[in-house]
Amino acid sequence: MRTYPLLLFRQSGPHRPSTRDGFAARCFRFLRDAAASGFLLVFAALLQHSASFAAAGAARVVVIPVNGAIGPATADFIVRGLAHAAQDHAQLAVIQLDTPGGLDTSMRQIIKAILSSPVPVASYIAPGGARAASAGTYIVYASHIAAMAPGTNLGAATPVQLGLGSAAPQQPGTPLSPPASGEKKAGAPSDAASASTALDAQSTEIRKQVHDAAAYIRGLAQLRGRNQDWAERAVREAVSLSAREALDQHVVDLNARDVPDLLRQLDGRTINTATGDQHLSTTGAPIVSLEPDWRSHFLAVITDPNVALILMMIGMYGLFFEFANPGFVLPGVAGAISLLIGLFALQLLPVNFVGLGLIFLGIAFLIAEAFLPTFGTLGFGGIIAFVIGALMLIDTDVPGYGVPIPLIAALTIFSALFIFAVSSVALRARQRPVVTGSEAMLGSIGIVLDEVVVPSSGEFTNEGWARVRGERWRVMSAQPLAAGREVRVTGRRGLLLTVVPLAGNPSQQGEPS
Image 1 (cartoon, rainbow, N blue to C red):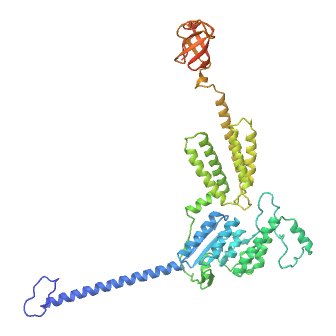
Image 2: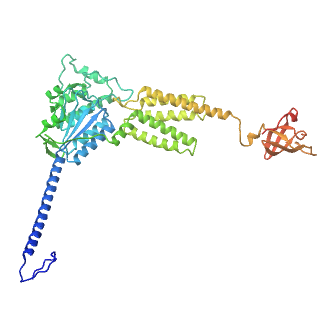
């Protein structure tokens, strides 16, 4: 006899299933098949959704906007942006450039990240009116794809002069070294002696920088198959090109109105990267624009030379207050944090260490002026050392990385006023009468409590008791003193005071408090 556990009835009659048994079995099979089919449909939908999501993630395009001078914060933002694009398996990273140039160390850090990127990198000078001057030109040449929007320009890649004692910058169009091809320019002196004279007029350091920069950008042009001769002229002669001229001279690969137009023109291209060929399918690809996070903003703030100099001064004065007044804690904590942040920012910048040493020396002289009787000599020397050090601090003329003269003047005036105010307060405090200790008793007025009699022996023979400053003291005098007589303290030996009588009627003078 067959049984169905899920049915709560008993079979009767012969050994054959009833109509009710057949209906229950069919219901059970239907529910089982429906559940299996639903599970398969859900599983297939999940697989399809995962596949489409992965495909969309792989097809995305990452845009990294760069505005302003290229420095440590910009380099960190671009390097992390390229790493983010590689982790997300993006098919293209677009660096949208608008920069007047920047620091050489930051530029080379960005170029290293571009050359080693597994994701194709397109440098796009945009929007209209933007530029990629100096360091931006190197970044464009290093990228897998170079593009410009209408109304933009690039070039002027000559290294800026370093330091205060550098030679004067060359005028645009004046070569800093003889042309590599040996050809003579029309309208220019044709003999080799004039070129040699032009070279001798420049410092060896400047020539080394220009030769190094020219070789660097020429190597990038060879790597990407772009115009090598113009790249070298951009370094040696500081020439520039518009978007149309750059396309005609094969300096850039294409002109595009905006990012969607750029992606439409790049669709179907195959780009060779550090990890092999990458095929682009950019038409309609999702665009993800990265924005600087808190770390980039923090680096951008502290690597401003003005902020770094102010942080360093706050740190020095905070530590000075803590050492001068132990136990305040807050000035020491704030000073230590500010000094460390300022030094961290300075090590990211091209700092002249002689200038940094002069700044520390000037602050030390100003602080010493508050404690030593130098009559302004240390203070004046500290002001001079601080001003010269601040002028020499940043060892570059890159726009946006200089310390302005008004800020130096303001900090100098503030430091001088602050130190001289502290010195005047200390001098006035030194001239005040002593109010505590043994010295405070000298000159105090007291009243004799009982008659001071003359013993038979002793140099100071008259001794007795007097009330001085509200306290009972044993006193001695060179002459007898009557009770109630006012006396002045002239010396102290332990608990014995030496007094002299005051002139006047003691009854007319009140007891001092």
